[in-house]
Length: 164
Ligand SMILES: [Zn+2]
Image (cartoon, rainbow, N blue to C red):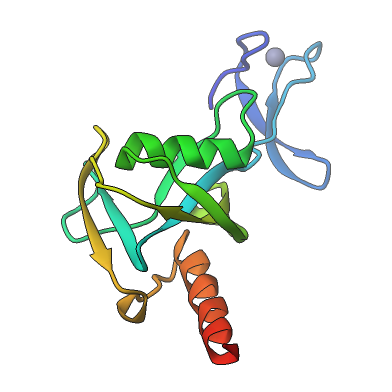
């Protein structure tokens, strides 16, 4: 961000509340660009015991991930992730569990990850290029973003299977 959304003057780096932030250069305006992380909802989708990974049209070939999306106004994380699952996979999912929240500093996001169960035939939404089905035993977490939710889910699953 370059200009103040309140008065249109330049934003300049300044020491504000203990760190360098962009603040309005006008003496009469106290706007600060806090750059707070954006919440993102993510779903580890399981369909009849198999994990569904998706590839967004804008992602490189071979890169698959979880279903993710931004929340809309007045939407809870739970209804937001079920809406995203419906949009991207064409099915009504059911939340099984909250996996956890994960800071994704590179993207300035806070990821809220859920385990979602699905039944039925997947119909890909407009944003997606492909999906693939991966048995949990073959699922390998990636070392960024939603990958940590995958790792935690796999570990929890392993513990649960060992207890049964
Ligand atoms: Zn201003």
